[in-house]
Length: 461
Image 1: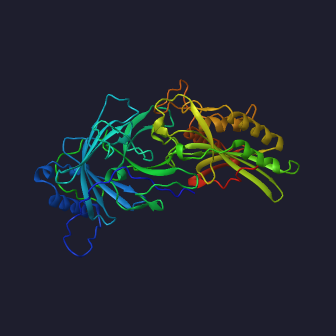
Image 2 (image 1 turned 45 degrees about the vertical axis):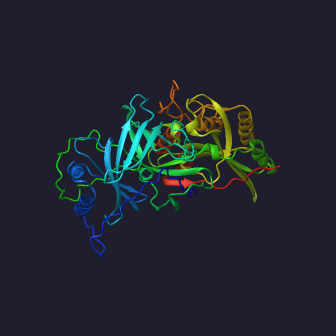
């Protein structure tokens, strides 16, 4: 089970709210919430900045099931994606701290890659930090570099900004937007996220994975114009909550490659006669419950597709979970050209849907032979020969005339002329098969949120 944390990209100087009394405030409505925020800003902002705030476009971001709360307020006449005040509050609506965020986007880059700068200032307009963003990731100068031109990056960071495309199931078109890792922008808060400190690194049992919270840079983009006045709203619906997404990540460079031959050899330790065998294909979406949401794959959030092979006879069982990855990190893959691939043990990996198929011992051996063949020659191509291509190729090798065919998409950052196989496409296919109720419907698992596969047997001598 994923029990992972992610390394925060920046640490900012936090400014605490002034206490008006020793009693805990009671925030019974959004009106009280906004009154509290406005009072805090009157104490913290310059009079000039206070007069330019557009309270009517205040937006709430709830992270970690509402345990972490941020309020964003833009300035009048400026879109949220250009500048906003970011306030951290507790669950009762009491202000904890705040910063001013200014964003400058380099529009000369491709639409599927975010580049520009993010400037952070205190509420008194005192500069804190300026971060250069290239293809979604922060670039920074090492403190001992001695050169203003030397740029590098932390190899373990999540992207600061991702580009999201949403593909409607009716095929009516593609919409694009940019989303910010809002918790990372704010810096170290000491919050506990997904069972681990938000300021730490680490990896789960499947190795090198993590979570990031992303909110749209401009939640009001495309909505009707809001009146430019700073009157405090008076209804409970005046502070909408944005569509914050929890995106799961895997860092291929931190995943240990396995000996496929040693893993496949274990199946020969169980006699064929009287054995039961199966193969199951699993899909893990980057955003649980959203099979139509895609991200720039160079930013590390493609989701994953992998296989589970199983053979049992009496009390003896061998189960192996196998996934295919590039041998390098997503952000080093500047082009979708083929790179060296590797096979990884995906024990305890999360999933959102799966299809299980019973096999004869002979069919299992056919699959083992195909995996061994591919392990000796296959290259990883992010948009034409990825984890989903590998898993479906192996799965279909014993389904002659009845192959599982999934919808393909023009993914952000991809260049495949006929579209790309994705975990999202596999999920959509399995979902439609389940709904149609065919003979394999009973073998399809669709999780309400997510599930986890079991352990692997491991290598055999």
